[in-house]
Amino acid sequence: MSSADNQPRRLASFLLGVVVTIVVLVLGFFAYIRFGRLPVATADPSFPMEAQIVHVPLEARIAREMQSVPFQADAQTYQAGAQIYVQQCASCHGTPGHDVAFASGMFPRTPQLWKKHANGVVGVSDDEPGETFWKVKNGIRLSGMPSYQNVLSPTQMWQVTLLLKDADKPLPATVQETLTKDQSPAAAPPATQGLKHD
Ligand code: HEC
Image (cartoon, rainbow, N blue to C red; front, side):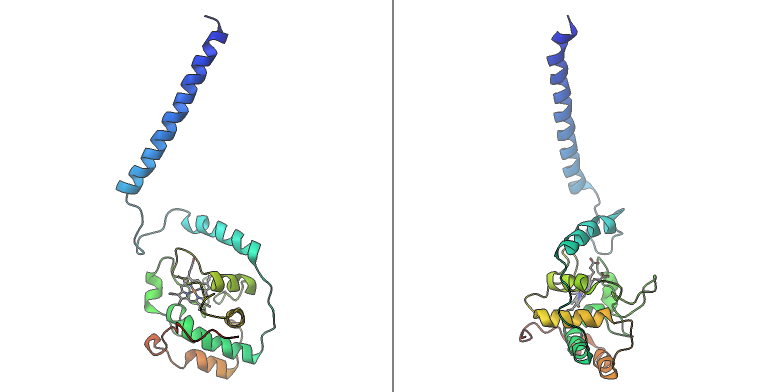
């Protein structure tokens, strides 16, 4: 038999190989989901590279949709931002000098936005305000971070964003006081209505 006669047969067995490989991979994948020990508990350790894999699409999306700051921050901005922060954010992210006990039991963990991290940066003060605004507006899927677009007005979201941008700087005493005066989340439950105005 000439090699030309062999060609269709070789092609057929190559295609069969491809199909069998795909079927085995799909079955293997479902078997892994069904019988494997995937990390489904918040207390489970993360997958190798999990943080990196999740952050690539998030950062790409934010880079595409990032808005620029519509106004500059002044004392009033910080004050308004601090009130919003205490009502909406402190129950998870804590306040200056006060950590939330359950924050580290979440997955991903809720970052303390008033503390220096290991790299020396306080909270998200090194992030572009447009990035923080995006996260507050849209939330972060499959994490505890809610979307606030139906809770806060754009102005309010910018106020809290600009406050967090300057979390590493000395803030007016009244702002500090608003942030720290009541440390118990029970006394400042996240408001769910009546806040939206412009
Ligand atoms: C129910 C808990 C919860 C509440 C309430 C909450 N957050 Fe978050 N937030 C999270 C979690 C969890 C993350 C971590 C998400 C991640 O790492 O992917 C997060 C992440 C963030 C980040 C990104 C942090 C970083 O290091 O990049 C910002 C900024 C932020 N939140 C701001 C806010 C603001 C502002 C509010 C209030 C308007 C708020 N959050 C309310 C749970 C919460």
